[in-house]
Length: 224
Image (cartoon, rainbow, N blue to C red):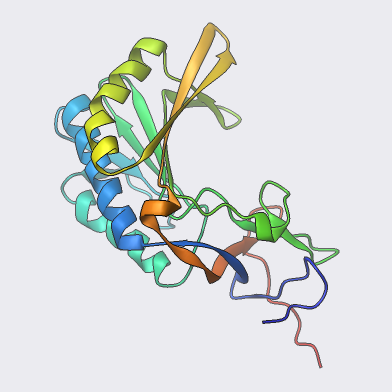
């Protein structure tokens, strides 16, 4: 499959095709549901809420009924079209508070520069460096400007204890990052889905491609 000059990937239907690590959507969804169930039962009294970025379906939706069925269905709809999207579902648990951003189809997407037509990752790296790893990210709350306030050490320990059994059983990788914030050091926890257990190999896939402003990138003009 040839794409011409490096970085000038074709864009159609709001997506571009890149060679990247693919993941088994059903395996990832099963593990994701298990972790959210554990957090809902252990840190939210049996019910929690989830908000989406899908137009007309923002929510909040109540977990487990009906969101335990409807939210995975939303993920499957995109998994049928894309290999990676950068989309998140925002779960909230009362006994904390604790927030979990679920990036079931990876945390990164592609961005096309309107002037040069070059396609890179949303972090500015070449498209071939796209990280498609599913991630569940735990922190305390959001502040204006998109800043995540991390967990206190005590709360991070409580979250870790709540999900530890599932993380071990499901072979998820736990990453704790200390963040210097107002009031002292806070912790952001991540559960990552390693390709050794959840991956299906490197393959060509459609990945959501946006403009720098966040709109879906327009189709490339047809070249004669």
